[in-house]
Length: 85
Image (cartoon, rainbow, N blue to C red; front, side):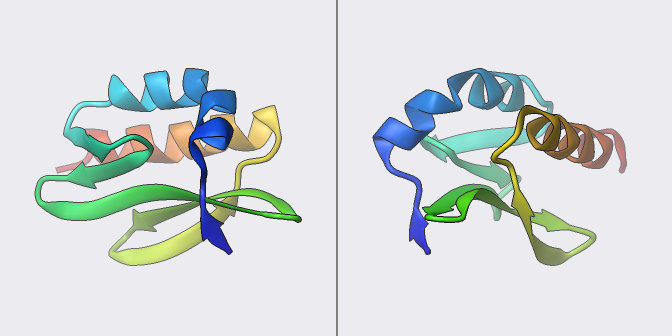
């Protein structure tokens, strides 16, 4: 599974724009986000679809974000983490 290409990231730009607005996250490279100084979120693509690797509760989780509904679930999970201490 390879990291998402610039063309793939172009296709999820609305999601990336929403993630950029989440307090406490910083995009060091396009599509690669950190929380404080710790890697937090990035995207992969393969023939099965688009996936986000996101650190939730201290562990990496791979989430399918191919569908609009799945993108919404990812954004919701990220916002919950941002709202927690």
